[in-house]
Length: 285
Image (cartoon, rainbow, N blue to C red):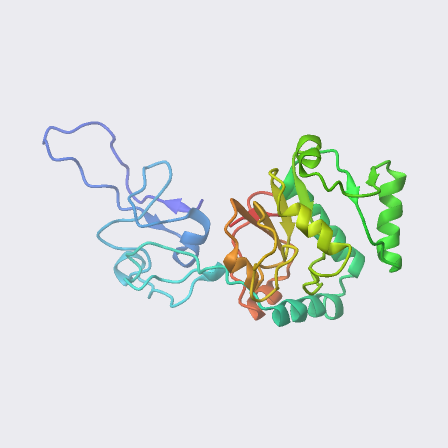
């Protein structure tokens, strides 16, 4: 990982009772050390690298290079200086206006298509829920939009079952299914709790005992204010970036699906996204 030790280190015990000092490890890339190696200020073993406690990383005494005010990847020096603990800035939720502006920029400037974005987000949401599952779809009010008609046709052609109605008996849902994916109102819809068929659906979802996975904005919640009388999801999957309502989310797990966002978009909207492990398209916050 780019670590170098200028002298040999003898691991054999010595005669004095005092333990030997740690080796003076030197980083070849001090400006990107914490981004790559996750340095947190603690001494490192010989196999993994580290830094000398006497000369904190980024200090002139350690590398001869002045410590930068801001590091790549959204990392900053803590208030205590480079010798303190390294932390990534918080992933701040976005307002509804910012989310709309970000989506508009993806569509117009980066030439993403609507279908492409929906497929990326849909795949990421499926990954966040589980790796292997057999879905059943309840689509109470079908949209005339050709895009949604195409998606419906694809599901039907792949023999994914559709429910003709949602049982009002909560126990039937608890016994028949392991989880509910909540996309009743959609990510862009306003609160329509009093409008049918959404009112009856939300009334049922409020009483089920199996986990609820909400996509972007839980149904019955205001995108800005959060939940007040809506459902209480166990899992929230934010699309691109968390919305303001995510501040009020009290469930067990919060995922974000935004790995595809171009770096310039991340920087413009100051998203400070977390690192996505491996090839994962979602990451837990």
